[in-house]
Length: 177
Length: 123
Image (cartoon, rainbow over all chains, first blue to last red; front, side, top):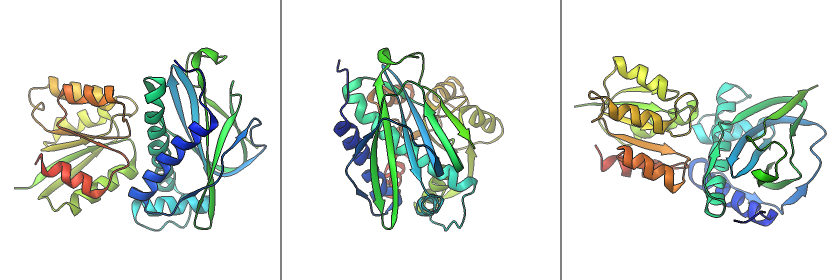
C-alpha cells in the first residue's frame, strides 16, 4: 500500500476529471495552469466554494473556488439557461459540478488506494470568509482558465492512519467575518 | 403507450438535465416524477406507478444501493427497470448495483447520447 500521493499525481487526476466534465456536459473551454502546493490556508475568500470530502483508508477534501460570475456561467452551461446572480439553482449546479469532478478524482485514486467513500457536497457563497481543514499539512492547488475566468481546484488527501483525527473526513470549519 | 419515469437524485440540477434528456430522447414520455433520495422515492412510489427509474447512488438519508435493495424486496415494484446514473465509478459499487438488479449503469458526467443509448436497450 502506498503512503503518499505526489502533487503531480493529484493534479493529473484533477485535470483528467475536469477535462472530461467540461468537454461533455458543460462544453466550455478549459486550460489548466501549473499546480502548486499551499501550506497556509487562504486568509480570506470571496465568492463560491464547494467542498467534497473523501473518507476510507485515505482522508481528504476537494475544494472548488470561483467567482460568483463564473458560478453563474457554470450553472448556465450545465442547465442551458442564463443566470444573472447566484441563487439556489446556481449553488446546486456548482455542488453537482464539484461532485462530478471530485467523485471522478476519487475513482482515479481508488485504483491506487482501494475503496473510498465520498461525502455529499457543501457549497458556501459569501464574502470575506475563511475555511479550515483540521490536520491537513498542505493543499495541492490546480489553477484553471475558462475563457476570461480564473478559478481553481484544491485537493488534500493523506492516509487516514496519519491523520490526527482518523475517524472520519474532517469537517470544514467556516468563519464568516 | 406513454412511459412514466421517476428520477432520483439529490441534485435538482441533475434531475432537470435528465428530464430534458428524456424529452430529447423522443421516447413516449408520460409523467416524470422526481425524488431527492431513496426514502423520498419510496414514498412517491406508494402513490405513483412508473415504468422506469433513473437513480443516483450517493445520496443522503437513503442511498441508491439501499433504495435498489428495498425496491427489489417489494413484489409490486421489483419488476420496474432501474438504471443507476451516478458519479460512483468504483467497480465494487457498480457490481453491487447490477447484482441487486439494476438493468444498467451510466457514469456522470454523461452525454445525452449515452443516456439515450442506454435507454434504447431497456425500453
